[in-house]
Image (tube, rainbow, N blue to C red):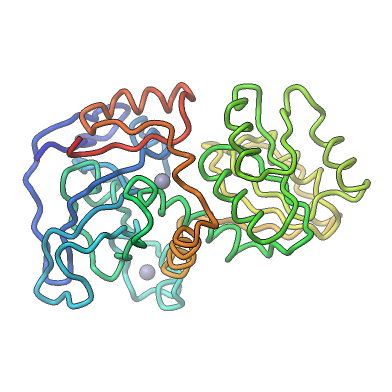
Length: 345
Ligand SMILES: [Zn+2]
Ligand SMILES: [Zn+2]
């Protein structure tokens, strides 16, 4: 079968190449991939500038939905033909403190699908049955491929941040993760302000369509002043940093009210200077979010099934897997929002 493979360490070194079709081990299932989302982190794997372990040669891709084509001997929870999606924590140690507490996204030995274990930019992908989730009947494969970023957003917004009705929440960065966080914030009954740059114009329009109460072009407007005015001088209750831009992190600490919550979701790529004493002066509660576990997937899929979160609107392009390079280029140039590849297309 033809798969998109990161075949060596270093920048680049990705190509569509022939690889052996995988077969499932006793506790695994083989999934015929119907739709696979391209993630910004795939670009980081391409450029070799991400701190999550990558083990080439490896089939890339970690966001997908498909149909079970074959099951291992010890798998009793699924059948051939089931429509499914799957978590990205392909290998975890199951022994460390984090694993034993259920936070296996934080396992130091975690190996991620599409990074260290063969992923879904291929016609078939083999995954552990215990990480597989049934796709709700009313969720199509393209929308279902985004259940991974949705689960990340659920973990960040619902599990790690306490958003309550009436809160004013600022979301920095209207990329796919920011727009999923936005929908969860709205589902929780909060007031949502989404900030982006001039090149995010189209994304900010989508944010409005998805329920943002207010958008701010941080290059045209004074974001801090706008947030202060919007909250009657008090400051925002919650700041969700989804852009990975140092300026957004600084804005967050400045724009939060005293005792507000700051959640870091975006990755900056490198260290930068930040006035950390603001966290003490304002008693800001800071937390981070990376990946997800079972509970976030279940909640995300339930929200998708009930139509309370819309992932399909985020997908601007569906391309055949053979056009993976075009998809990577588009993402690099900020064209489109979410691109989905179809292996059989
Ligand atoms: Zn991703
Ligand atoms: Zn572990």
